[in-house]
Amino acid sequence: MSKNKIIAGLAVLLVIASAGVVMVRHKKPAASQASASKVQTPTYAKAKPDSPLTNAVLIKDMKYAPDPLVIKVGTKVTWLNGDNVSHTVTADKSTDGFASPTLGVGEKYSYTFDKAGTYAYHCTIHSSMHGTVTVIN
Image (cartoon, rainbow, N blue to C red; front, top):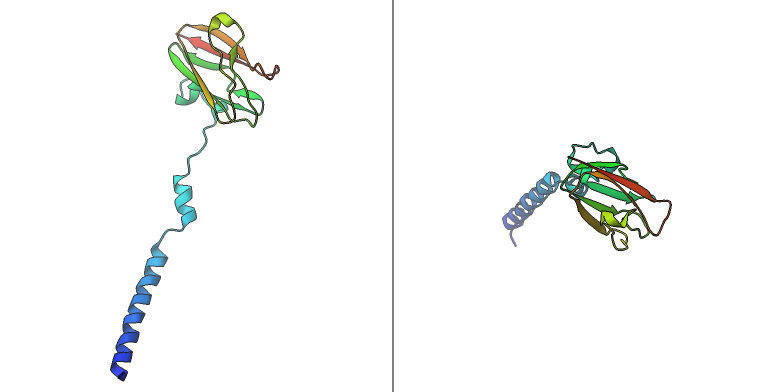
């Protein structure tokens, strides 16, 4: 092999290697890509009556939050079990018409409130857990 071919071959390798380094330097790190696409968990307890989160109740730390929940007639409320144990969402008065099945971890239950009023509810598994939904016109 001649000296010119060796030099030419090394020059080609150097160009290829340099291009690879430039590409690696301009690539975003995986951590920043992950944080950019990370979805923040809403803070349900701080939701205001007119905010879009007022139709969500998070079950966490053996509590319903927010409590009380104030909504307008016709609003569908969804309870999400974010706790590490099962819970239920059951109206105190059977005539109020809502009663979830047992909700396992991560499961949800929804109910649409069609009449104005105050609706008390509880967890049938944990007697200390109570919540209220106030429905306004």
